[in-house]
Length: 325
Image (cartoon, rainbow, N blue to C red):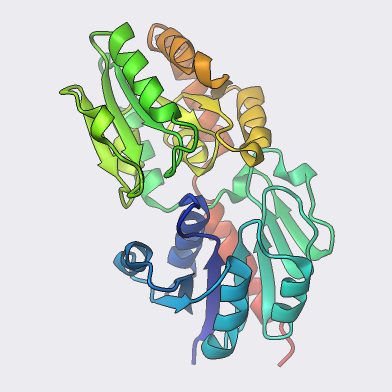
């Protein structure tokens, strides 16, 4: 009988897709040796569809992310539970740890009570979470699905000049950055083509333009990234996906918890950090500098090699092998 893994991302209305995408990437690597299930909010048909389309069973539960985890654990009878998000307090972790081995994915270094903590961000190796028995940190553990490796191969073989920008500031676009960036790009560069990512809750009516392709909650950004010259947007999971594919990025911290990753990617040399009002000028500069873009692409691929999910999956399997019968 297969061991069972219960993966609990913080997701749903008002929350971006980054935590869910990381857990889907991990679920892909854990299968088929483990039976995996992902917990989603009750009656969220969009997230049920997104999880099911990747071949993993969604398990609905009510309440906050922590409440969903506590509610789902007795039903799932897991051997290991993986939490991804910022809403899992230590008390909830301690309770869940009585059910199964516990892994916490957290890029802020918050307090934990777990068997293994994973900080999958650049520089994360220096931010060990207090309270964990074991720790993995840094960009080598970035949780990305395998299609970004395939997209990376495509960009390496691509030739010819391009002027294509992928814009994404998160599924919610909390500060209206996306609309302003797209409008400014179209005004500033008549030759640029723009692909813009929006969530299902974001109105896209202001983005209507022949040069704009609107992508509503795409199942993956691997394809759109592989066609982009520059990525402009938030410093969350998409920033790591861009680095892996080899797309230079202009990043801003759309929410406060992205600031450390934006700083780390800029310091590494694969991204430019910019205030929201400076995103377009920085992007236009990169579009005019092919040698700089080439250097940034090489650095990004070296920093985020695309095998992080496999490494974390290996650590989860090792954790289960050490479990007390």
